[in-house]
Image (cartoon, rainbow, N blue to C red; front, top):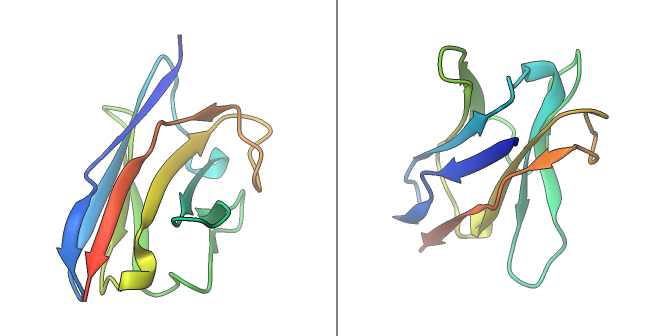
Length: 117
């Protein structure tokens, strides 16, 4: 059974940083077939990171987030810097065909990020 489990969320102040993790079990995450999404309170879910051969970063996070991967543990990371209150949201990782842009086979349960001013 494939599972994606996010962690690393929390409460930070404006300007702070967080590293979110997405640990996969039963599946090997490929950078070319994964994405990070977020859903702010009362709003629709939006894609912030993804892409197949060409990386995609949403304008709202471009220059403030990077992704990395630990192949030994099949864990994907989202590094977020210069956080703003507008970054407050539930963050989700996703992986598996059809590989986006918003359609993925596997989704995590989410981790909450709250940024206070």
